[in-house]
Image (cartoon, rainbow, N blue to C red; front, top):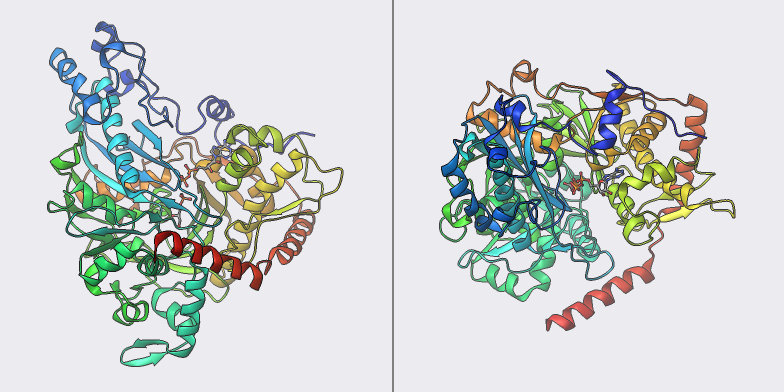
Length: 637
Ligand SMILES: Nc1ncnc2c1ncn2[C@@H]1O[C@H](COP(=O)(O)OP(=O)(O)O)[C@@H](O)[C@H]1O
Ligand SMILES: O=P(O)(O)OC[C@H](O)CO
């Protein structure tokens, strides 16, 4: 049997184009962008055919390594130095573009867009993931900022190969994996420990302690004591969970001597990944600014949603000094310029937009109106539903977050969010840990070789379950296996797991908002899978709209920066000014199964979730505590 076929919205050819270029739009040639149909100066200089405009490079080496002996990549600005001689031989054009740094959980990319959001060029690099124990996930902050330097410099190298001067990039936006927590020293500018990544679950015991404290002591709100789960949710829109930054920072303070000592002597700076990037990009220890945008701040468990300020009662509750906190800024304003010390090809260029990656995707998908929703399927999967200027608190497992704030004087736009911890990471798990596939792109072939899962369900609760279940003791559960089950059934069940969880989140959104979702806008790495998107439409019972340019997250940060700089007439408060942005070749997946089948499948999923829940018991918790004790012994604490 053949896998369900997606239905082309505009033209069938868009599908074949996609299959030859796994993501992004069709390649854009230098001639198209320079308007130069005659042989280029580059080719006159005898250079090889330049890389495709949307080519992605996933290694730490530049795509140019080995391609052009005269300009071999030397790393950082060294690689660019080869261009000074090239510059002198030819005239580079001056255009008007906007750049976007997008640091996801697994990789960083820098994308240069034009005013219609066509990708001029980009560069992407993966950085190391540090997994010291089960459930622990760290990244070295130095690797993160190095990756930013690398992607910017390499993209600029490509841009100049294409005949554009680097001054064509008028500004940059930044978007980042959220909640990931960084601690560094005010006096040295150096990180004090590895960053704890958003999906790290080591803080289970911290969460338990603070749950008890919340019940017993509570938080001081307006001079009065408020206790229980709702006390926290009413202020921040989010519950106590291993997911958010405050508990990660608390863990660092309790387990890293250097962090605790820096806190003690008032030498500690805390930030999310955006803060760390802006600090370094604007000069680091030599005058770097310490900021956090409102969307990232809304993931810390410290932000009061209605005032957009850090809440004093919460600082006391978690035991943090106020002086460690960054200044909260809007998502669109000029924060500073890239400093010389960053050794960047974009020295002096303004940084003018910041948003957490899921909020950036909300903007990039142009969900500006109340009731519009998007789902981004990256490492995790995150549904955001615009609720306008109203703070809506969910009663059924969604969280409330800042969607974006288009400038210091603009009102914030809020969103309801359904956060699903595991999406693409389950595909990576099949690839790297189980060796079921060699590449993520093998999923369609394998999972599409069977018409259904043969009764197999895979509750991918590797990090517990987030929305709408919020069960930290759930674990990954493969159920319904028989001797008939094959790797194809498991692969298909993995794709279905994402769709069921998104459906569950959207059910809550529909019920709570009283709005029936007709169409879901999607983006992120997993949307490269046609089958995953068709399965989503089938299980969701709604249309799924995938834009042809799928870098909506990066685009969101670019739109915020462009808006702040007054570029291209973009005005986020007037969506009509963005009508020409990313409009080509959207692709619609229509539901292709009937409601009865859908209902039966969803019932099966709900039963599977019940089996996965509450699996981690007291013994497992004790194991975690022993693991922590071992860590403390190793650290000499
Ligand atoms: N063709 C594909 N089919 C299915 N999954 C894919 C495909 N290409 C990439 N992915 C998945 O997309 C994820 C990466 O998406 P991305 O949006 O870059 O994530 P992040 O921003 O979290 O780093 C990976 O987990 C990978 O498994
Ligand atoms: O890496 P992503 O794109 O899955 O995004 C991670 C989220 O920001 C975590 O909240």
